Length: 472
Image (tube, rainbow, N blue to C red; front, side):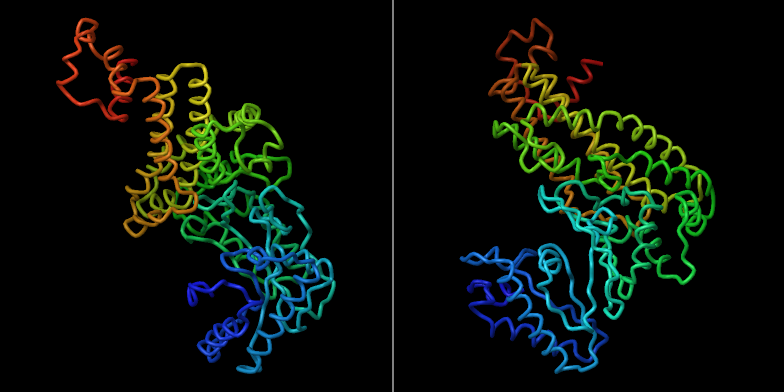
């Protein structure tokens, strides 16, 4: 990255072309004698268009001129170092519009790489609230090598899956891969998976699509082949859990691939917390799912969306936990990591989101105690996931989720704790002792002010435990 090499300079190719060229040349020199596919092209710093950091307006032709000049320069530099080098370029994001306008100029032997939308479909991705779903499967010129950049895990800060198994039906994914082959776009296949372990199922399916005899099959057939290959016992029961996982995940919009992954729950939850504490009138950047609605209508829409799916997830989680105790140790560990954790993340996250939205309504109705307890329950739901990570039955995978910095369930817990204490300060008072006097002390003791010196105010966790015990 230019900014790492030259942290004191503006990362502008137009201002410092020679310094950019120097970095590219050093990269070529390091790799020219290795089996490397050189990916050429040009974006800005930090996975964004270069023009986002420039102080001028660019027409589409202006953008194309810069990118085309960089591609030609990089291509010539690579070929000078290694005339037989293989080059590729990603037609992705903002580059797609330039390509579709016929303005992108690529050497004939550069492999053109097309990405899916992060949800398994070979169309352009949604960026923010803009979701044009431009078709990318084409076979216009058989003389051009084309490839795909296919996501079995994705990160979009909205609704994608990163911790969990892709929620789209296996048959749907297999059909997309079949269409890729028909279009002649499988000269180079890259699979974006983030961490590998949670996504074994779809990595395996993508690998099957490379086989000469790959044929499109039903969900049941694909799952059965996978389970029979990886599990040594209870195969029918385990296959049924996989099948139900895909049936239980749900759509946030009408198109088949618009299904919610793990990021939907945590990002929506954190947006609600910020909106609540900031006394704002709508959830930010949620038009892609709620349209242009104000907060109350947004929450009503999301509540109506998720509520029918909570009980099915809870049942699937219960059934999976019962089954998980039955197979031999190796199969139990594989089942825990490869499917149950995905089920658990969905199950406890969707409940946490529902509880948080309920707490918002309770707070608005003046029931601060009930809101406090609902937020405590939401925290406890997410703690189930983190505790499961920390008690992984397979030692090899004990720390695989330590760097959950995308979905970031521990951050969701921390923000819920902040919100919970805010609710308590308002409802329990600045000394946080009124609920104890009202609900936990004998009526006679609650009126004796000096008894407050017998112990410090209970922590939020302790208060929640004692209040729930009192309620029970």
